[in-house]
Structure formats: structure tokens, C-alpha cells
Amino acid sequence: MTLTYNDALAFIDGLLSRDRAPVSTTETIKLRRVETLVNRLGDPHRQMPVVLIAGTKGKGSTAVMLASIMQSAGLRVGLYTKPHLVDYRERFRVNGSLIDEITLTDLVNRIRPHVEAMTVQTDGPPSYFEASVALAFLYFAQAKVDLAVIEVGLGGRLDPTNIAEPVLSVLTPVSFDHMDVLGLTLDSIAREKVGIVRPEGAVVSAPQPPEALAAIIDVCTRLRAKLWLVDEIMSWRPLKASLHDQSFELRGPWRDYRPLSVPLVGAHQVTNAATAVAAAEILGEQGFPLSPEAITRGLASIQWPARVEVLQERPFIVADVAHNPASIGALRDTLEQLFPGRRIILVFGMVATHDHRASTSLLAPLADVVIATTPQHIKPLPGRILAEEAARYVKHVEVIDDRLTALDRALELAGPDDVVVITGSFFLVGDLRETVLKHHETV
Image 1: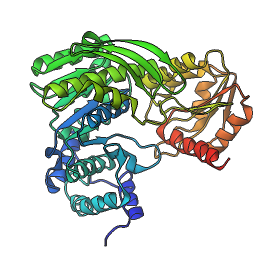
Image 2 (image 1 turned 90 degrees about the vertical axis):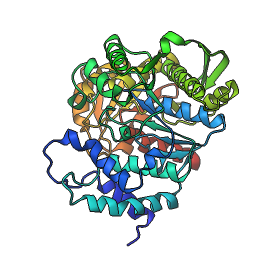
Image 3 (image 1 turned 180 degrees about the horizontal axis):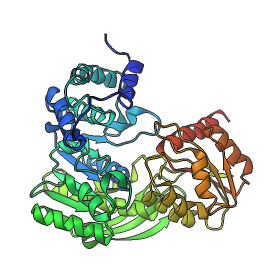
Image 4 (image 1 turned 135 degrees about the horizontal axis):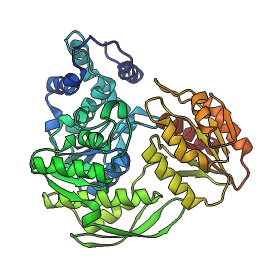
């Protein structure tokens, strides 16, 4: 039976909760399962040059910036990011356009018999994430892209994306997250992330904490990989910023760039841009086309919603997908920069796999009101648990599990000069961002 589009989405979603055959050592099969799947599909991951981008924060933004620069240089660029805000198709883009429903349906129909055949094997069927990576490579091979920019998922060493042989590995800032899987120290977490580096490969690293940097340098030295440290080879200076964009100067060993601009806010996005430019220049050294104009156009034209995105004014509504302590900290710093002294009402919801205590300690003290809610997710953190933590820092805390009702309550409490901030989870932000935008369309 051929699947329809809705059937195809249901099939992929079903892999999230599907029962697996028991295995003796889970770690040893993580890459083996996805390798088996792509091998059955003709090894599409070997049919284009690949850039892998790993880290704790800034992966998606850096990937989008790099893809846009290389597209502006004249390449046909595939971009894989995760998770999506609203539509599963957001994960798969070629030259900035989402995969269309017909193509995605066809690709799912192609992988389905292989997924089903693997069900009876010892390793079991591929996971949701493994199947998604296989779909990305299959799509990019079919689309005949000149370059695939791939955002790595959890970790790096054992992430499904690591089946590719990258022409360049990029490391964005590493910090504490997923410690139950990646380890309890920055050294162990960084060593998992740097697992995307290949012997004698090319590596770009964004500025890192000392412990993570030491691990990155150690691994690259042992692998004889050439490592470029962005904060050593590049320098940058902010020029001006609004609620929707910012401009900055950037200098590097390749050239001094005229003032650049990005339609994103926050100092962390300038760091991401410097990392993306360094990565693009190194690709240029490898023979990919590049020009100063491509860098300028590429950064200025990116579209990357829900990254400290101001959805409306009076009151301000800000949506941001920060979901771990590192990204929550960047959000806090940006809110302090953009809205000094304003009253903040926080609509806050997280999933259970992230560090809600550290995240809350960073952001809640900035808020006057916290409305804790529960995202729609397979492993949501109950709003009451988040509220208990927020109450350590804020007097006015409410628990409203229904997400739309939580947003309505925040807007009810907000005056025209106040700031409503929606954050903590891609799933929460995706839902409520759509609600706000649809409301404006009907007004």
C-alpha cells in the first residue's frame, strides 16, 4: 500500500514510540542501524560533500548562515536542521525552500519497506532520528546538491549524522546539556561533540570554555586535523542593533569585511556569524566558490524564526526556542540588552530531558511573572514541576498546563509596554508562535 502524505508523517512519528528488539549494547548499534538503512538505499550520504555542525548552542543558526552564504555563492545547498517548529518538512531544505509534500511522501514510501525489513533484525528498526537523517541524505542526493550542511543532533560521535565523511567539521559553543548521555564534565561532553572530526580533517571551532577547548585541541592534535579557532583568527565589533536585526564589523586572515548585517539579535548571533564566515572561507580554500558579496548577501538574507523573534509590539511578544542552560543564558542576556527595565511575563515550558533547574535559575529572576505550562511532547516536563523551581526566584508564579490558555493569561496580565516571552521548548514555541501570527492575520 502506498502511503499518503498524512500516512507518511504518521509512519515517521510512529518510530518515536515503536517497540524495539532487545539489544545487548545500545551504544554499538546507534550508527550501525542508520548505516544499514542508508546502505539499503544506495548510500546517498556519499553522493555529495558534507559539512557537519555540532555543539550545544548555535548549531542551527550557524548552519543556516553557512548554507545561505554558500547558496549566495552560486551553489545548490541542502540544509538539514532539527527539531522543527511546526512542520516536519522544515528539517529538509534545498536553497532555502522546504521539501514539498509530494517529494517527502515519495521518499518515505521508499524507505518504509527497508524500515519494516529491519524490524526483524537483531538491531531492530531505525529510530525516528535515524530515519530522518536517512531521508535528508536521500533527498539531497536526489536533488543533486553541491553541498549538504548538516546540523548534528545529540552529541556527535554516535549521532546518526556522523555516518557522513565531512569535508569540514564545525563546533559551536559546548556547554552542559544531556549529561545523562554525554557525561558530567565539559571534557566528556566536548569529546562526544568532537567525534565528528576525521583524521587529517578540517575543523572550525567557535569560542569555547577552557575545559572544552582543551578536549577539542587534544582530539584534533591526535587526529592530525587542522583546527581553526574562530576567536584567534577572527575579530568582530558590534555597530548597531534594533529589535529585529544588527550590524557588525568582522576581520579575519582572509580579508576585512565591510559592515555585515544579520536579521537576528543578540551578541551570540554575531559569534555564530563569525563562525559561519570562517567555515565558508575554509570551504573556499577547498575549491568551493566564494566571494565577499556572497558572505554579505548570505548573512543578510537568512530566515530563521523564533530566535529572539519579536512577533508584535504593545505588548511585545518575543518567541525564542532556547531549551538548555546555554541558550537560555543567551536569551537572558539579549532580553536585558533589548528591553532594559521593562516588566517581563514569562510563558515557560520545557521537556523532561533538559536541565530545567539550571535553565530556570538563569531566566526566572529576570521575570516579574512566570506562567509554567506543559509542552506537547513525548516526554514533557509537567508545568507544576517547573513552577516549583520558578517559585524560588519569582513571587508571582502560575501553573496553566494548556498552552493557549497560558498565552491568553500572559496577555491578560501584560500592559502595553510589557514583554511576554515564550520559551523553553521548540514544541511550545512552535505552537504559540503560530497562534500569535494567525491572530494578527485575522485582525
